[in-house]
Amino acid sequence: MTDTPAQKQLKAGIVPVTAFEQNCTLVWDEDTKHGVVVDPGGDVPRIQGAIKQVGLKVDAILLTHGHIDHAGGATELKELLGVEIIGPHIADKFLLDDLPNNAKRFGLTGRAVTPDRWLTEGETIEIAGRAFEIFHCPGHSPGSVVFFSKQQRLALVGDVLFSGSIGRTDFPYGDHAALIDGIMRKLLPLGDDVAFICGHGPTSTFGQERKSNPFLQG
View 1: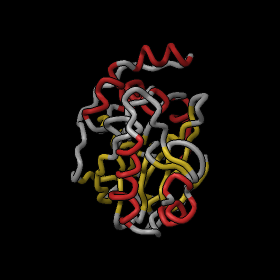
View 2: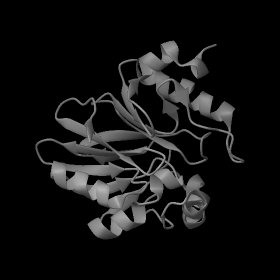
View 3: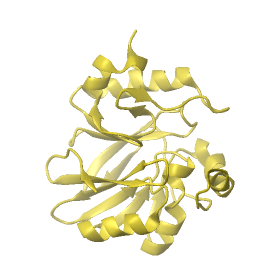
């Protein structure tokens, strides 16, 4: 498990899962050990091992969107931990309902997911005692959401934005223009100093992506 940038005792760690090397992320308060699991896409025993290693008291499971590599293990982990699944936006319901079929296509395991709570633009949720704002950023999937803490200067962006790239939009429901609009209009204005954890690959900052990400130039 790799530590990631954090401030003011809020910690985060990445647990790579599935053949897609998806960044399942644990976020917790260092003092209380309370926190969340973000995007448990699969390999649930590995995630459980990381939870035990941290001593994490899981309050909830958060989903950034409904793709199999992000949500495939959510129902199993919910049953094991007895916590709620929160997110994504309801526009991804069709993806979460179809997870078993998608799992078969990719040789993965995954059960359908019914979140206990859908998220919408402008809501605020609490993660480890900190407020995180919700931004609806469709394009990679219709219901993709981003979690942002103004206090921590931290965003959990799923597959909306990557270090040096952006989420795929070549799905039948993809929308490249909407994805770029969401990044440029909603995320980058939050500040160049904001660090983000994405669904695949290394962490980065909005400032670094503003300057060098080829998809965000011009």
